[in-house]
Structure formats: structure tokens, C-alpha cells
Image (cartoon, rainbow, N blue to C red; front, side, top):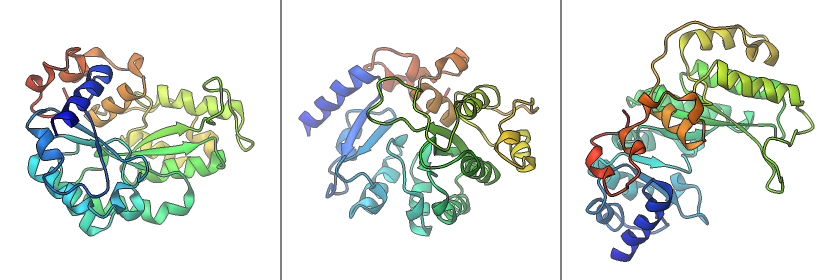
Length: 276
């Protein structure tokens, strides 16, 4: 276990985040508890890359139960599978100190399961603004499909993070345009994220939700007609912005103290809970 913690610190010194890898079969008490004795700050968990869907792993209950008992701020960086969020999983997730719950809404076919996941989590006391959904576009979808997914998520009270598809073979970021999209439409999404959103995300503040509900199509929804409102920037949105290199859209005063500290050895002393 000492070597595992040493490896963790090596990763941390390079990335500024404590990252820990879990795998199938890790028993309760064998991973997170040992780590917690050496690291008291936020815990960024990655599931084993060969078994990426944590919510259907054989030991998901053990891991959730342990994290709930530890109370360490935790982020499952690879996200949760919204299709598998039932009452039992929602109840366990609600007990874990997870400032941000990552999920994805990549195609219309999973709409019923996405809605169910949000409603189940809310029934167990999880606020919608803690749920951040990656919404894939510029893939096999079209702008109207993308608009409908964004509209639904905002209407259900979740945070939307548009994620533009980039082929693995691309040599330059932001060049690929799928057959069902145009460069102008992709530019409209990018501009709306900057003007109507925050740090690349579209939070469910009332004027923006109403704008999308009134819109009849993609063009109306992503027009840059100003919307009012004074929405408080929440920690999950700040973290998403930092993680996806949207620093230019963030006031420095919103940076969590542990993110401003460059020396990882000092960060545990700065943290009592995530955020400002």
C-alpha cells in the first residue's frame, strides 16, 4: 500500500490533483481507507481502464459504502452511467461527499434513463446543479438532436457541458466537422457557451432555461440574444471550467484555495470541503 500511495503522490506532483485508480475486486477498506490516512484532500477516482463502467462493477456497493463512511470529497472522473442509476445507487451516491456527479447524455436513445437518474438522485436530496452532464455533439447527431438534449437537461435542472467530438486521428483541435453539422453551427455552440454560460458550461439558471424552452429549434436556442438573471457560480461548474482549460472565463476569486496552491504537500491543510 505504501508503494500505491507513493505512486499517487507522483501523479499528484505532476497534475496538481490526487488521482487514485480503483479496479474490479478491491474490497471495502483495502483502497480508500489506506489512502485516507495519507491524503486528506479531495479524492479524484479513476476506474480501471479495462473496466470503465464503475456503476456495474461487482464491488460498487463496497466502494460507495466505504467512501460514504470516510466523508472525503470525491470525484469519479470517468463519470457515472446514468442508465444504471436506480434507487439503491442514488441513495448511496447521496451519502458520498461528491460535489460534482458526472454523467453523459450522448444520444437521444437514453433519454428515459437520463431523466430517471436525475429524478432518483433528486428524490434522495441531490441538487440538480451538482449533476454535470457531458453532451456529445458533432458526432453522428445533428444540431436539432443536440438542442433537444440540452433543453431537456436544463429543464430537469442539471448542468450541461457540451463536448465537441474530435476524432482520435485529428492533428488539430477544432477542425473536424461531422457531415450533419456546419462550421457555423459549431461556432454558435462555442459562442453560446462563452456568452450564455460559464466556463464552457450551461447552468440551469431560470432565464436560460426559459430561453431554451421557448426556442423552436437549434438556431433560436443558440442565438446570442442576452438573457438576464444573477446565477451564483457553483463549485462543480468552476471545477469543470478549470479542468477543461477555460481559465480565461473565471474570476481568480472563484478559484478554490487548494487549486491555487502549487505545492501539493500544503493542500491538505487548506481543505475542509471543496470550493472557495
